[in-house]
Amino acid sequence: MSRILIVEDELTIAELEKDYLELSGFEVEIEVTGDKGLARAIGEDFDLLLLDLMLPNVDGFEICRQIRERKNVPILLVSAKKDDIDKIRGLGLGADDYITKPFSPSELVARVKAHLARYERLVSSNVQENEVIEIRGIRIDKTARRVFVNEEERIFTSKEYDLLTFLAQNPNRVFTKEELFREIWEMESIGDIATVTVHIKKIREKIEYDTSKPQYIETIWGVGYRFKV
Ligand code: CA
Image 1 (cartoon, rainbow, N blue to C red):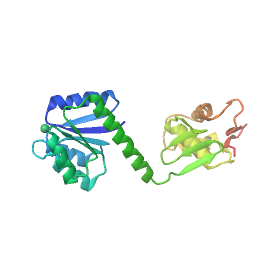
Image 2 (cartoon, rainbow, N blue to C red; image 1 turned 45 degrees about the horizontal axis):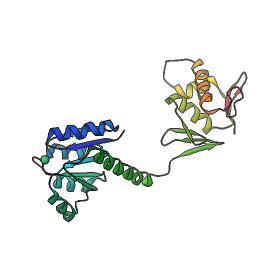
Image 3 (tube, protein in one colour; image 1 turned 30 degrees about the vertical axis):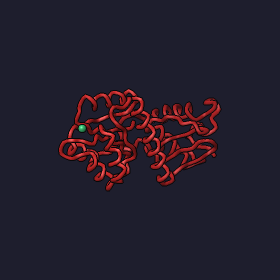
Image 4 (cartoon, protein in one colour; image 1 turned 90 degrees about the vertical axis):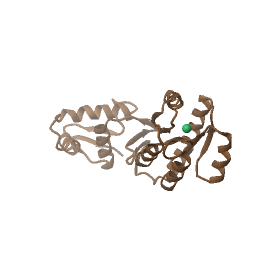
């Protein structure tokens, strides 16, 4: 969920912005003074900043300038005066957008969404390529710990993911339940070898087309399991 910081000294306006953004599924925090807003914007990870210009202690111009020296987070300036717009442009503060009061809530939400989407594209295009295992339609993204079957994401618990990844990383090798239990559950005293069987069943339900004829994780009777390639 995207986190947004509102820095606005008029609490009724801040609360209104917060309500609308929360209704759109965002997590929202409010600060009512410039210095506190600046400190949090620098110290914490927000996905977007909504900054009023006229604020106690440190104004929105100064906050914007200081944030831009350190972070790429999208900044939307909120101004009560049309005159401020020229100033925002002239100063080259690096704000991504500005909006003048009074504004409609839907306009605010639309702008926020647009900037978040643009920022996400920017960030993801800079991300290093993830470490990926691909076997016959199954793709395991090890960096993100996500699993896709024919490009459709399947949700795994942490242990199911660990077990599937371990088997897929060692294809065609047969492991006994004891070996798998030691490998995945290590030092944890909870559970026993039956846990392995339960987890294999759950994984199969998520990756196999027909769990009675598994194409990926094979049962080797009397021995254990293997990931078939
Ligand atoms: Ca103000």
